Image 1 (cartoon, rainbow, N blue to C red):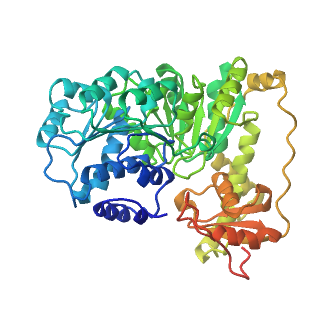
Image 2 (cartoon, rainbow, N blue to C red):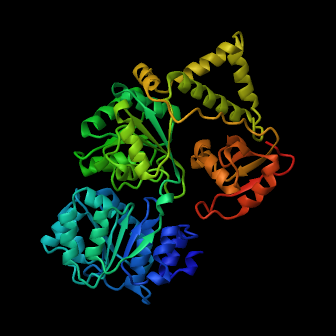
Length: 549
């Protein structure tokens, strides 16, 4: 199904095409189903599922009907309420480009910004207003925000707004809105308070499970480590060093812990920023911008600060302090594994917390692998393997050869002239290790792991890679942050094979080449040709004959 099959105003089709949107995500297709036209909705949809565009399309259809575009802006026709400043601003930007071809004007009203400027923007007229509960209530009380013309209202991440204590503000806004409006609630989870809110403020809302419970975590792998309480921050260092994620979100339970952890990681050489409730809006914006543009790789945050953030590139969520319950676990972990990408969530538990974490995982319907915290030796071995892979790639192993230039060969001869080649290689290893944060020794954690009850049983060793294999390639490389850790599940899913039937994986700048067991290669090629709705732009094909590498 494409957007052409859905009831979308023509002007918005142009906006979607200009942004490269080819097919709707499940939540977009679900809320635009003809059977739900005009109805109030209660939508369960995980973060990163394309829900902003989903309710933007619903609002446009509701407000435009058959009209080619919006008329002159006056009192708002629709209101979107979001839990945090960051999310509200992101939603405003997303709706602005989506509605721009139809002449839609979208205004944001959020805490931390100049309320007088927002009041002037409201006085100038807006078709849609996006804001946080507290600031919208303030504008409502000051008569800056008039809801008499309102025809639709969206609560985005409604469960988080209730968790954050915004019930009073939400109810005041909902009571002030016209009774005949259309109301849409989006929520990652549907706890009882959300269902009660929907029952009170919607008209027989249709339930839309855009993310069924059994699929809520399917793009996220879970891992749990038992750690000594006194070595928790050292364990954070080792997890980050072992995985080397391009971007990571580390959760701590208090502002003080955030400050201490961020400072400690920075001193060790990690590019780190912190996010907690006492920061000004400008400081929060600078921290998030540093993470988005790659100047920082690690964000340390509290639950409150990280709610509502849209950070689509997060590869790792590290729960340095355990979430308070299964719902918080889902919210936190949902910051990775977004929009079809694979993600990893790692939880650190002190011995006294182990069984509480086990119950929490069970309530969330999540299976986590309990494994030891990576030690210094394991991390150094990983460093060596990465260095070897980089050298192999530069030397053309496993790919098309990249012959060294005469100048490079001359420099190499000068480098080893009169020196033992092994000592030259050792110097390169030393230099490579010096640029990386040093791993930590964890003697207390190792002792706690030895004393802990045994896990469910010994893990079976994984079989080695297939001996007889065929080379394939996938259209993802280093330029798109390709990494074997999240590529492997994608490759298996696309071709309908197990991990044991995938061999070597070689990441190149613009593509990645990998082996498939020869007896599965033909079936794999047929399966991989089918379009994957979760990754429609990713192409997989066998390498031409005669080019095994």
